[in-house]
Length: 212
Image (cartoon, rainbow, N blue to C red):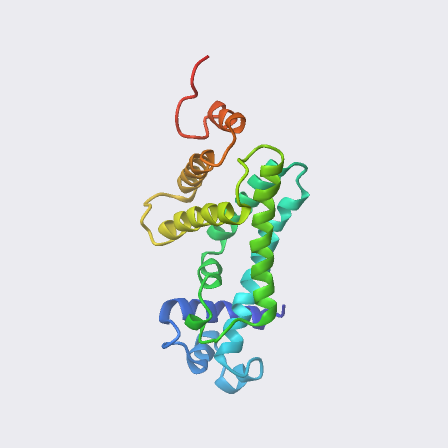
């Protein structure tokens, strides 16, 4: 991506998150970028196109973070590495994270462009597949992979949102530990007995493992 386009998208993301759609205009964006409005229109013919490209770039980056888990050898490694990628993306790119989960209506669109919808559904299916394969090898209890993955995502997203909003007054490393411990505790409810024992032995549930 050309450097000027990267700057436009970065400024557009920041302006949208600060001012919302009502406060977003091509004139304000041009000022923030440091160019004239006519110069900006040579790249984009309206704010909807700019915001669509911001969401598109966010999803492309997000895919890179979570899909790297596919290189792992086992279902549980792929599951945990995908979770690490999710958290890394959320912490390293908080603005992209926030705008990526904005509804089309809040972005001034009736619906997202088809390619962005496809990326969203692709990542959605990716998480369902990670859950399903963990069920197939006896790590998670047999259940509906879709509903289970939605519960897990709601937990992860809620934790990240609370941290981004400053409601967890801690640094990133402390939040990482809290996120992982809370996630393991939540996951233990879906785990088979044997896998839950492994979580306890690794002390990932924030409690002392039972003594034999």
